[in-house]
Structures are given as structure tokens and as C-alpha cells.
Image (cartoon, rainbow, N blue to C red; front, side, top):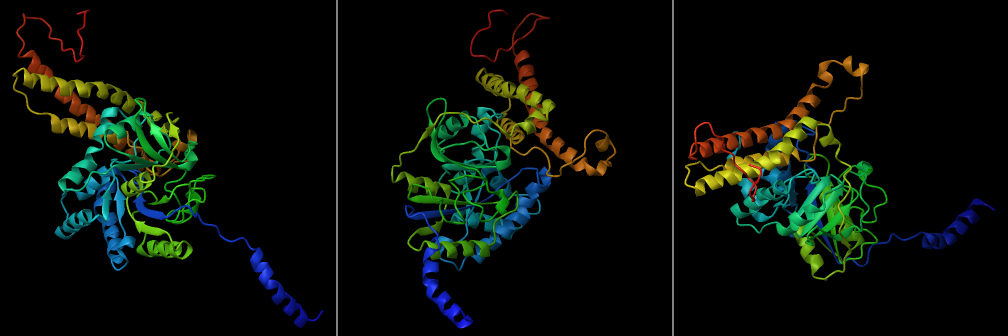
Length: 451
């Protein structure tokens, strides 16, 4: 067979060969894709705590402004919007020495226009360790911002990295008006097998809609490919929905890596172009987690119910700080007693100053101690004698980051101890009693018989 006849035969076979190639399949059930852009925030991992807050207030938010401005010529539904946790955004929005009037005005404008979006949660918390009160008070940062700017309160939240949470979290969120929670895992820590999208029911029967992903978001379009959790049927590709997703609306949750800031405007544009070409009949637009919840609920979906707590595989940070944990266990009952006694003293006519701001600061410090980041990112891979031979420069920053972490609960303890001592002094000096007697305050709501 000569070359010419071989060429003719190959050309004749080409249509059959092309036909035999499997066509790329897309989810035909999905009619709407809501694109939600986030960054994973670590409070003290890539930077020391004070440095990372300043980084949020300057370089990171300035880069976000550039992405927003660069997308200004795109159709409205493709213009970049960035979702941030309440505490992080609160710190970014606050006035600080060095803030410029231009940045201040831009922050206000972008928040009012919906291009900066606060979600309900303050940051990722180790909910198995946190008390109910700091979990609830952690929602104040987002709600205070929304009220200040006359914006609707956020009804959704997201936590990333921490793969496991207490069932009480569902109860706290549901009673606070949070309707949707996305949990995106740090997959090497061991993610929990769930139905993916489900009603998470707390101990009292209250529920929050929960989407559980084996990776940071519902895809790996803006983070390293190796970060995708294995065998997760709820993971999509770029903005495309997961093939087995059974609902009409898909949340394309894009999450960039640890404190890395927003994706580029070019990348967002590429992703929109790709899905428009591959799924031209689908309504694809930038949005929020609230948008997803509302769109999903319109179809009244039948969802599985999960009533269990999740076994925590992220608890090693807490286990590394027994001194801080001891302080935390002491502070939790003491802070509520201090607040109650201060209120009672006022009711009884004893002149006392309000402690509400100090109590709020203490709870903020307690919540930050329960935030999921435990130490800096630099690992020291030496142990025993090998470690002792290392120069101090090799580990001083890592040890300092541990001190930053324990410093939160030390500060909270100092605040609460100060309030307690002041309260008890005011009580003792205003109670009529015999000389050399003891004044005992019982913070419990029932009488103690053994006294």
C-alpha cells in the first residue's frame, strides 16, 4: 500500500474515529450558576497576627479594588464581588493610623454597592472548643457592619480548613438567623462523609442548610490543583457544576489560598467565558451565598437531614497549649458571672461603671483563641538533639506565633479578672455585715445550702 492510498483510507476513517470519542458531558439539570468569590483567611499563619491585619487593611484590599475596577467594563453579572468574614472585614473597614481618605471612601462605596460582601461568621472557629456565647457574639462583627451601612443582615456563613464541627453550631446559627453554612475542608486532615448538601440539625431540633465540600470551595479553579479533596462528587470543574448535582442552582464557590487575596480579573473573565461556551443556556452570574439559599429554596428541595456532630480532626492545635486551655476553662464561667454581678450591682443601687465594652473585648479575644489557626506556617523538622543544635533564628518566629495565640486568652483572663475584682470590692464595701466576716457571692441561680 503506497502513501497516497494510506492517506485516503485515514481520511475516510476520520468521521468514524471522531464519532467514537466520548463527548464532554455537562449537568443538564442546572439552570443557574451563582459565582461566589472568597479567600481563605488564617489569622496568624502566613503572617504574625498584627502584620496580617495590616496586610488585610492595605495590600490585600487594594488588590481587590483593582480586580473590581478591572471588571467594571464587563456585564453587570460578571463584575467581581468579594465575600469576606465579618471580623476580617470589620478590621479592614475600621479607621486606623495610616488609612487614606481615598481608601476609606472606596471601602464605603464598594460595601454599599455589593462588591464587598460580609458573610455572617467572623472567621473559621474550632467550634468543638468554643463556648456558645463567643460563637453567638462572633456574629456581631458582620451584623454591626450591615446595620451601620443599612444593608440586609447576612443569612449565610462559611468556614474553611477546619473539617469538623460540634452539632451545637447548627443550633447557634439557626437561632441567630443564619440559614446556610458552607464548610470547605483541609482535606489532609480527614474530611467527614456527608450527603454533601443537607439539613444539619442541632440538639434542639433547629436546622441550618449545610453544604460540605472536601476542598476549600466547590472547585479548584483559583487554587492549586493538588488542593482538591479526593472522591468528592460535589466538586465541580471551574464554574461548571458537579455532574451528579441534582438541583437546579449550583454555587460555584471559588476560594483562593491562605491569605492570598482575590483571584485576578483575567482569571474570572476566563472562567465566565468558558462556562458560557460550554453551557450557553445557563444563567451564570456573580452573587452571594444568600442568593444561593434563596434560589434553592424556591424549588422546595427534599434534602437529607444529618443530626450528628462531626469528630474533630483539627484538635491538635488546642492539645499543644495546655496552659492556654486551662485559662480558657477558667475564663468561660467567670466572664458570665462577672457580667451578671455588674448588672446586679447596678440594679441594687451600687454605683458601678458599665463593663459591656470590656466584656465584648474579652469575648472577642476568647473567640480569637478559638479561631482555627494555631501558629505560623514555618515548620521545624528537627526533634530532640537535632532540634537543640538548631540556631534560635530557625524557630523564634514560630514560637512567637504560639505566644501570639496564647496571648488572646491571657488578655481575656486579665480583663475578666479585673472586672471580677472590681465587682467584688463594690459588693463587699456595700454590704452591711459584722467585722471580720466574709462576703460570699453566689453567681448560680439557686441557693447554696452548705454555706
